[in-house]
Image (cartoon, rainbow, N blue to C red):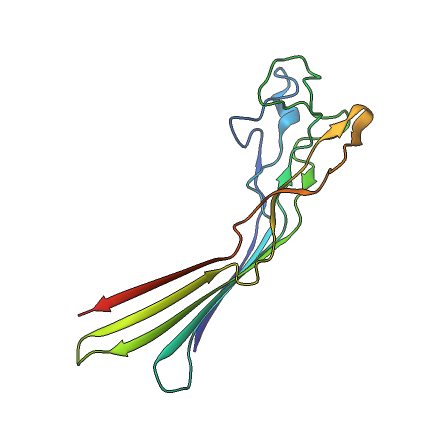
Length: 176
């Protein structure tokens, strides 16, 4: 059995994470300095390779990824700044850039490899890979829209985009 793991503690700050972010006040870019959309404060990744102690050369390869949520920009849903920006980027009064956060994410992937020997220097690997094994929904984005008076609109905070659902793929690899 082999395994490895990594833990990352980080902080990413910027004044614009992508082309679709417009400043509230173009003459005060310092006010836009905040956590980046790419910020993920904590991330834990663990993977292993386990040769099963049964006849037939079968290997299991789990991959577990757990991470804290990512920042999301709260949006007013209208052009309250009257700057004509598209997509709409105005924030409700009192809420800073990227001051919301998606929920934490957890994804388990699994690979299974069955090796069939075909002679001294040849073998066939039959491979099954399952991504998001438990089909757990991890939010990649949430509904960030507020109405007048910084009151959250219906559906606020609910997931509007998720990481990939379960995907299963099969492969064969002949080495000679």
